[in-house]
Every structure is written in C-alpha cells, then in structure tokens.
Length: 257
Image (cartoon, rainbow, N blue to C red; front, side, top):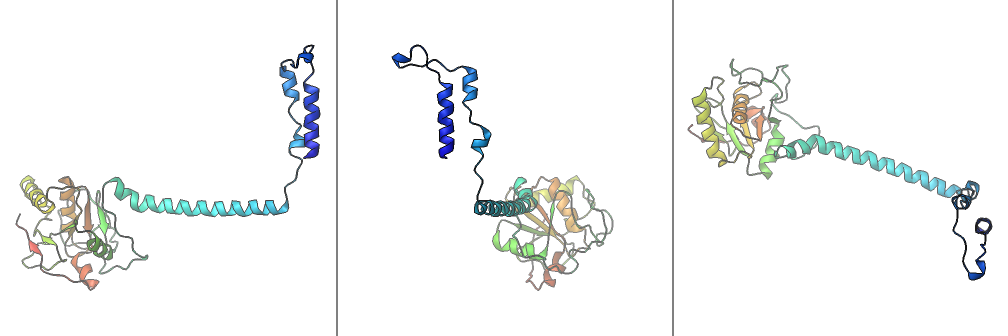
C-alpha cells in the first residue's frame, strides 16, 4: 500500500506542472493527455494476491448460491405446474397431498380412449378417457380433502337411475349426462345449475356418476363448460372409487330439472 501511495504521489507531481501564475496559488487546467497519464498502472492495482482462506470462502459461497438457485428453480417450477394454472383461470386449487397418491376402483385406469370435445353419444357405460378438454380431473382423496376445506364446491351426481346413494352433500340430477341433449335440455340443465350455484359461474362444480366406465359425468361436465362455468371438475372414479376408499355415502338431494 505504501508503494502504491508513493507511486501515485509521484505520478500526480509529474502530471501537474506549475504555470507562470503559480506564485498566485493557481495551476493550469489539465490537458487530456495529462489526465490519461494520471491513471495508475495495472500492475499496481492488481499486484496484491488473494489469501488462500478468502479463495476457499469464495468457493463455498459460490456453491451455496448454486444450491440455493437450484432449490428456487424447483419451487418456481412447482408453482407453475400446480398453482399457476388454477390461479390464472380463477380455479380453486386442489389441496396438496403426499405422493404417490392412493387411487381406488380403477379411477386412474388408462383405457387408451381419446378425450372428445363433444358429448359421447354411444353407450354411456363404457371406458372413458383420463382427461377432459377445458376441465380438470380430480381423484378420490383430492376430492375428500377439497370438500373438507372448501364449502363452496357444488357436487352434482348425474347417474340415471331410480334410486341413488352418493357423496354426502351431493345434488342428484338424474339423466343430466345424456349424450343426446338438444337446446331445450341444455337450457333446463343450465337453469338447474344456476339455482345450485346461486348464479355464480366461478363456483367449483364437481360432476360424477358411478365409475371410470361411465360417460354421463363426462358429458355433464362438457354441458357445464358450454353454459359458461369456469371451474368444472370431473370426478372420474365416481361412487365406486368413493366407496372403494371406505368413505361415507348417503342419499343425495334430488333436483328436478
């Protein structure tokens, strides 16, 4: 440091020649060339080697920052894949559950069936796809956790039968998943949903029937999307998966539509 100070002092003395007015205590303005000469040499600025201890500390800090960056990237990726889609579309997020998640009664069975964008007009009790365009698929434990924490969820059972037992709190719209709906049926179905949701099309709607081999709940989900509901959820496993998980079920409230 002492050598550097002496060198800079010498450079400054050489770069500030006295003018003829030095007796008056003033100096001449510096020229561009003189200002360039005032820059200390690089060998003086960078001639002090770092200690081994500081080098090791720098390496440890670099490794820590890399690990922190990797953790932040994973958290951000989880946010993008799990929460952001739901938040972006105003959908209620599913409660996080330990993975791998248990499933019941073939609710996650892949039958290699494509997901159509229009209601299924064939046999209603046949293998279904694993996804549905415009809506989300929920599994049994996810639905149970969601119903425990969110009382705004409306559950609609659409199995066409004379007698029915279903998820506690579900509404039963028998025949509302028929694949042959015309304008009149669609209007009646939309009117029934409006009553159940209080006219709030952002409320979560869960549709179910009996199992993953039942198209009725799939069709009803598409009708709800067509009616303008923003958070439609398809419970593909239906009551077979619900009872397969040893969960309680009861007689639902029948809704005339």
